Length: 111
Image (cartoon, rainbow, N blue to C red; front, side, top):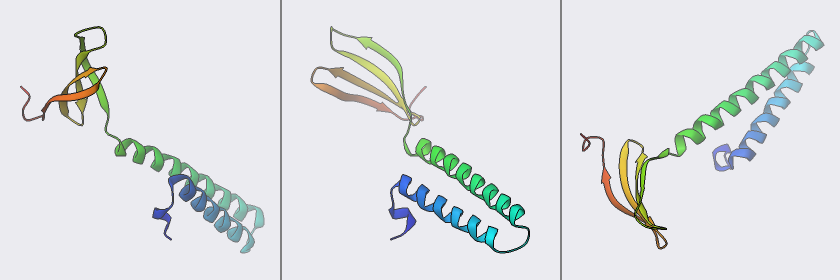
């Protein structure tokens, strides 16, 4: 099993445990013990910060942003809305029966 096959949290834990192991080995490897331990802790802190940033960027890139640009009610529980999704504009109708895509315009189609 590879790290990529693991869920994100399990992968983060595995990487952090590996970093802690490397820090422990560096501390035991000789030289000034306290200096090596501090370097190991610094390495762990850098890896943890990198993991947090990587997770935030990957989750933001994975899900396209949907923004409601306009909404107009046609009745008590029905209406139409213009949404922005990855540069495209979507005209949807909504009501008690659900949401229906009425029109999709790509950036090249827009005035």
